Image (cartoon, rainbow, N blue to C red):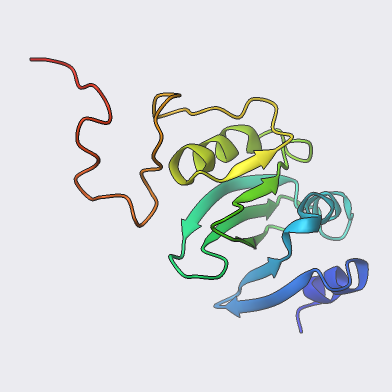
Length: 159
């Protein structure tokens, strides 16, 4: 077992759901209830030092259980090491605590996941849409969104 996974399992019993390593890239699935604590630990532990959030993205798995995933791409400048942290969310309650208090760079990344997938980040300092109009009721990157869009859902410019 990877030493990083062991360290997380010791520090947060029951939070690590599974881990995969493929071609040297480690991905760890964790429970949503401790995401902020896990991220803070990954950043503050001197041996790990994941001090940079490279990306946060939403994924629509389009399955009955845990339809959505939020994937955190982390990097340690000290160790020159990447980590993918994944959190599964149900369709009925796609909410997760914001990690902007851990990495301020998470702000816009969480806003994008909110705008495109409808994943809500609690305690986010400015959670609003960034691509779509504020009153737009759809989420364009969900798999059930029509490929041609929703007719007349957005007023388009006239020629």
